[in-house]
Amino acid sequence: MHEFVDDFGAAVTLTFDPAVFRQRTAKHVLIFPFWNGKLVFTRHRTRGVELPGGKVEPGETSLAAAVRETFEETGAVLEAIERIGQYTVGGKMVKDIYIARVLLLEKHPTGTDVEGVIWFDEIPEAVKGQKPFSRYMYDDVYPLTLQYVRGHPFLISGKT
Image (cartoon, rainbow, N blue to C red; front, side, top):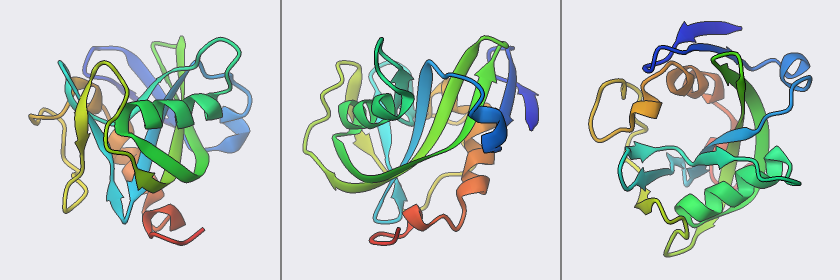
């Protein structure tokens, strides 16, 4: 279990232990979608570059929300997805973390707050305090999750 304070001053706990995260119901999701070995980001109209994610709608599972949010914010159609972790913010907000392999990218994301999709030749690691990244990317969830998924088969196209 990792514990730290985010860029907004809230306490955060992060776990990659299924025995822990299977006990809590998340109302939010964060997705690390990989396409041809590249991490797919969304460019939010006001916040900047961030990973897809959002709220679980009433009657929806976090898995369904992860698939929906990824498509809405990036236009990505997923071929595989796996819940790999969970974090809490301020002891109240619970977010499931997913890793996904993208089958194809549709031309236009459908999210109203989305300007477009972006990926980098090299997956950015040090984003804290860096423009054009969103302030929501400045905490330790992003780098710790990147470290956790190193070597995961979804990073390699065509592997399961």
